[in-house]
Amino acid sequence: MTYDEAAVVLGCFEQHTQKRYGRWQRGTREEFGILLNAGGRISYRMRCLACDHMSSDLPANQWKVWGIQRIEFTDIRPAGTYDPCVVMGCTQPGREEHHFAPRNTFLDDADSWPILPLCPEHHREWHRRMDGYRWHRRAEAA
Image (spheres, rainbow, N blue to C red):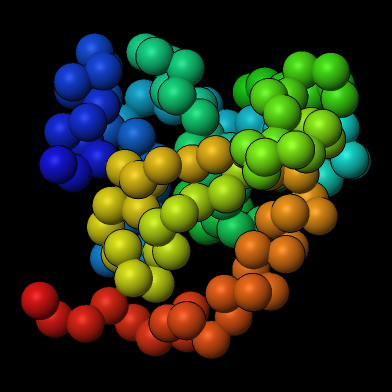
């Protein structure tokens, strides 16, 4: 199932912003904004006006490429509003979203795969342990 097919199943018929075939593509009815997490990290995002789906982090200059002139929303996430880190026994807030489908391998449907909250320490640990496992290779032909 593609990301757009999943959106239809979830009740939204708009195309959402996502990275397809190695390039960011803008959705059909969305607004641009900033997400500020409890750690002070700023993310640039697009949000669907129909269903409130929020895109993954955009590259810092992508909004300029699209000619976006203003910020439509600011989403501030205080520490107490995060789901807990999914690592068993961890009591820290899951301030970072971990994508289990790397974009270099799942070129057009990375956002269709699970995204779970991790604390920054466990997120770094996961990537450190997995370093070298296909991170820098493009998708292979099936």
